[in-house]
Image (cartoon, rainbow, N blue to C red):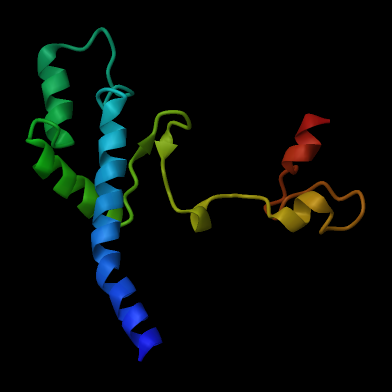
Length: 125
């Protein structure tokens, strides 16, 4: 009975914890300024900026923005990376060299990743 009660209490707290963490993450994304800063340039008119804000629902109140953000995250849309200039996708879709290949999981002297391109260590040599 004690273990079952413990598990049920933990499962009851889990949705509250997930919502709380998601609100914190959403808030942290807004602390750095406008999330559309990577799209803006000095040559853009006010109408173009307003169009981008409307496209990403940034012209709406914060609770509505949170709803759209959470819906996107739950559907697998993690947004756009300003650093990589590409969509942010899940790890299973990225071209990542596995740890075994970096440490010597392949044949000796084989500096090729699984896609045939040179492994990152080989590019640095």
